[in-house]
Length: 167
Image 1 (tube, rainbow, N blue to C red):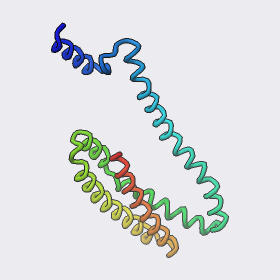
Image 2 (cartoon, rainbow, N blue to C red; image 1 turned 45 degrees about the vertical axis):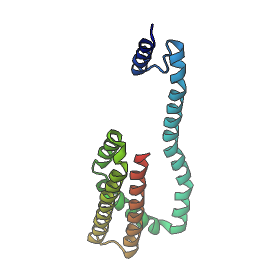
Image 3 (spheres, rainbow, N blue to C red; image 1 turned 90 degrees about the vertical axis):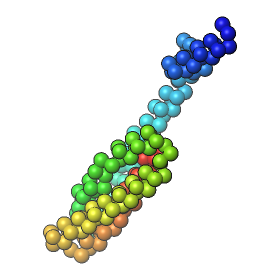
Image 4 (cartoon, one colour; image 1 turned 90 degrees about the horizontal axis):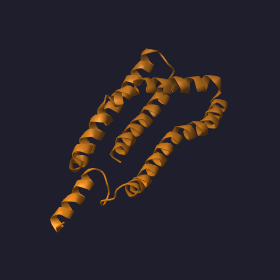
């Protein structure tokens, strides 16, 4: 075989998913670390909500104890109103953003700017809707303040989510 035939064969093997012309057990050994990293990352992503819930259980007990039944009820209503309107912060934009960056990584900065801008406006709209619902339902001033604080937290979480999609 001449040099060009060897190079062509290696190129065909690389296109077929084999690394550096490895065949058989060698090819599977190259794929194993990547598969192990993928499972490790997936397990961390799955473990994060569990750990967060475990940490929030004593925090919730502390908040209930400090606020009392009425204060915690107001807090719960406020966070529930914000959570109910939080669906406005996405509207299917996440998938579109991830696909556009995957197709053209060079446009990531512009796409991130657009994503942050649109989702910031949607977060403000969601917060305003939650405050409006709070006022329309005639809740106490404390609940309105809790809604405003929770809505600002929603805006920050929405921005962080958009930036983490770029990773």
